[in-house]
Length: 201
Image 1: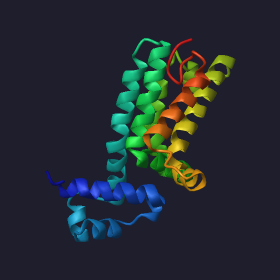
Image 2: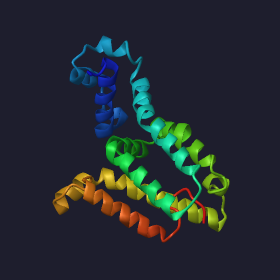
Image 3: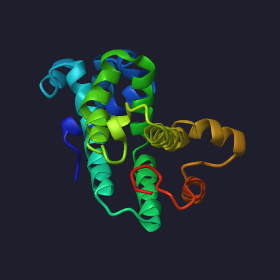
């Protein structure tokens, strides 16, 4: 089944925003790559910002829905491993997610505000029992858990965004099945029976 014009616009914009960030991508190039005229693009997305939001929504809405599901599961070592596998698999299947997050973090401003306020902050504020004060508490426990989440987030996203560097350096694709399994084994070993992000003691 062929994709709709809107889907092809989103696919192309996702790739360009992931490569160049919001400022570096142009609607003209999106239209050219899709094979449509500029006015046709505006009939689907009223502005560059709205297209950017739609790209992020398509990637982040299902990702945070998955995180909500994982967070609701009773904590256990088995669940920790399964959670890691699902989070890593999602990023490997959607590598532009990590790249777009990185681009927004580097750009700051409205792009970063959008990520934080629409997706990240609401999710973490919904977990007060896990991160007291939503990560803003000065308690040692809150700081420890926040540091752990930041570390795992860094390693999962970094595995995707640095894949081209590591592929060139080590001579294999870090996103291939065996390499991803080894990365999950490494992350799981770091938990030492604890939870890799969203569980209890």
